[in-house]
Length: 132
Image 1 (cartoon, rainbow, N blue to C red):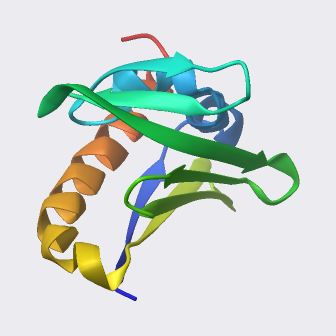
Image 2: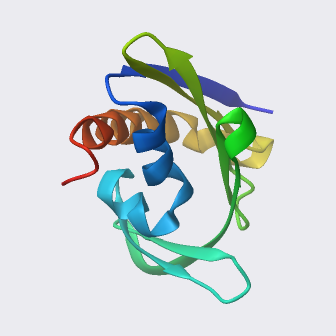
C-alpha cells in the first residue's frame, strides 16, 4: 500500500491544533484545496474540493483524544489521513501519515503536495490561535 509521512513542529499547544483537526467544519480553513464541508446527520462529512467543486467526497472522521489522533478517511477512494499530535518543548509535533490503495498510486505526488501545504496551513493557523 503506497504511503508517506510528513511532520512539523508547532509553537502552539497541542490543544490548539486539536481544535482544528477534530472539527470538520474547520477543515476548509487549513486543508489546501478544500472549499467547504457538510456534516451529515449520520456523522459522516461530505468534503468539496476546489478542483471538483460539485463533486461530493463522503468522508469518515474519527478522533481519539487519549492518543492525540484524528483519522480522516475518504469513503470513495479509501485514502486515509492519520493526524497525530505529540508533545514537544514549547508546543507540539504534528505528524500526518497518508495511506492510499494501489489503484490510487498515481495520486501519490499530488497528495503529498496537498498534504504538505495543509500541514503548513494547520500549523500557522494553530499558532495564530485559530484565527484566519
